[in-house]
Length: 385
Image 1 (tube, one colour):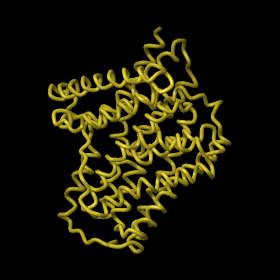
Image 2 (cartoon, one colour):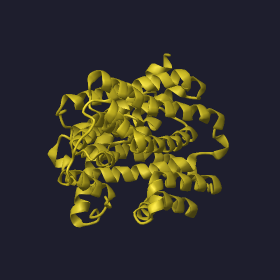
Image 3 (cartoon, rainbow, N blue to C red):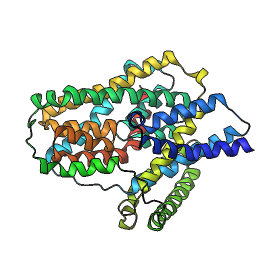
């Protein structure tokens, strides 16, 4: 009993400690909290397995994702595309990811256990983000070991992708695509700097004030209502479709709630939801059995993932050339899909182009919203190939 309580406290509080350390130690910040939590979770789960641990793991892993989805969608602001390039970049980016996932499945995915499910998760994470990856893992019933391996490879290849863009990609695409060069004064960088400062700041600062707790309580109450309605519809759909209906209904109602000003304007929804995802990551990592990791299959998974990331980028460049999408809009849309919205201010700053900031954030938010639907559809399509 005592060991179980200790484990629950570790799962709930360890992410807070890791976030605190990441804000103060540059090396840890570079590694990122998710990878650190994976390492901690794997170490705990393989070194110490007290009686009652599986029940705690099942409970927390089942609860965290449904709670996180609405919270992370509540604050989304969906803007209409302001230019032809933005709309085309949004559409061609989605098409590029889907084509790359299907091509990668035909080349590598058939050699992977649960290849269609892996393809569905790749579609979700490379149109949305970690929240979509976690949701699809739950929805498609992907084994913990495969999920951990996929997420670890994603961090490695995504880092190489960003390094390529920052080192040579931006300059190369500006030469190859139209409207590549921009002259931006120092004053025009203020909006980008503001977004970067937001990204670097402690997102939980002020949460435990009276106003912060009031907002959090309001959002959690709305979340519980949405989870209850979604679970009810899932039960009506039957055991086979329960998880699919649950996740897609959570996503739909979360998007719908984002149009309600009283919900959208409340603070901390995204950050509380992300904290639940951190807990989920650590719990799932603790469930992974190192002895079951399929390293031979992992090579195919790594190749599949690399092809999706760099293949989708290549296709976006081709589409940009055909439809005359300017280089910076193409790059920021690719980053918004592959790395998710938090990386948009960084890439906009690297390009010294404030104009693409709103476009990138809007495309990324759209990806969050559509990722679960698209991932499920692609998974079903791959099963037929």
